[in-house]
Length: 512
Ligand code: KIV
Image 1 (cartoon, rainbow, N blue to C red):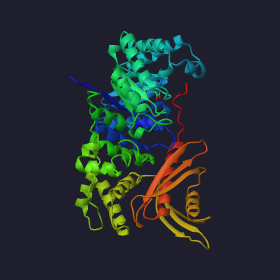
Image 2: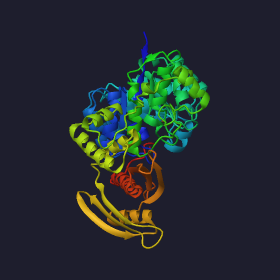
Image 3: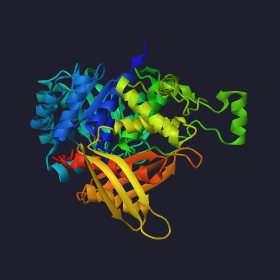
Image 4: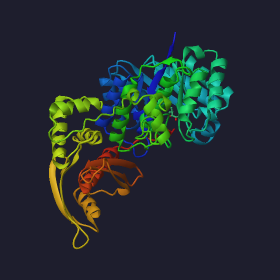
């Protein structure tokens, strides 16, 4: 019988906690719903103790999830465990994921604890968590820099105390496939009660080895993989869900496992995460990059025309990438628009559909041909429609001579506010106008513009990154046929994320 793998997604926890990737509650709900529908087994929805916002989002996701187990992270502290338990309470199936470092360097410098004290803490906290749910995961933070004998002892203690999943994180992205294989194999062979728990992987990508390490662990006996959409996460990120899932699906000869994942949802999920975080993926990113299925060289194109299998190891359709010739325009009606949305993987409710259709008509008045990339920006704009600061109008006086002025109208917390500001140029005047209406101290760290499609009537897509006084980064993006309007929208989008974040002080999850 083929064994079933557990796919554990931590986009909303490990992914969201990295600089510039924050998401609002509404955005987290959208991502969680898509993950749930895609067939992810466990959704790590956040770290409930980190802030009230995290607590509320774990709880809201727990209330809505139909299939997946909903999990909250928790440090090895009783107060954290109680908060996690409270947040996952509404879930059909809930998990508490508690962790403690085991490596000498962490214990000596960060936690100032002895090995024995840590074993006691594991026993107490895991058994405490089991008092709230039967599904408890315990992680040995920095496991890959922990002496193996001690790691075995810690794992045995956690299982004895009731842990049902044992996670062996490569917290600092230091291990290699061979070494990670040996660690997992040793645990399988030496820990007497190991059969009572599922072994899990959690690999950071500091050396670019996260996916390879996760796959090596599978071969050694791990049966849960922790991963994130687009590989987002701390520093260089985490194992990318799309990479590990498609490796397993494509190389069944090496990884004969079953998964519950609808791989056709991968492209849609990737676009959704890009859209809500405001951070895109590089064009050559495996599986979801714009070039992942583009065959440019002559010899490859020749082979592809003769037989797609010559240069294609998986089909674009298997990850939900559909190439269609259906270009939309101002004569396209509701029916065609809905069909196009569905083809791109979006099923919108009636109100959201009407809003998107109105934005489509508005765009079609400004732009002759509407491509798939344009449609994605319309759906994205829908996700921003409930934001507390919203763009209304912008009129610019600009050029190579004379004054440079922006007349701007925004809606702030439901009230229209306007201003007229001068600047060194049109961009400066536009951003000054936003600052005049919504005073803030954040500084601009990134301003990037690119044309979504070809032609002079193409929409400009602008990405903005702002940094607040505490060093917190927020990204935002906007798209419009007018570059300055797109810039204003992107700035406002980033500002909304900063405001959402600064209304609460988050705990650093690694703090003792
Ligand atoms: O990287 C890490 O060690 C973690 C654990 C808390 C799972 O994120």
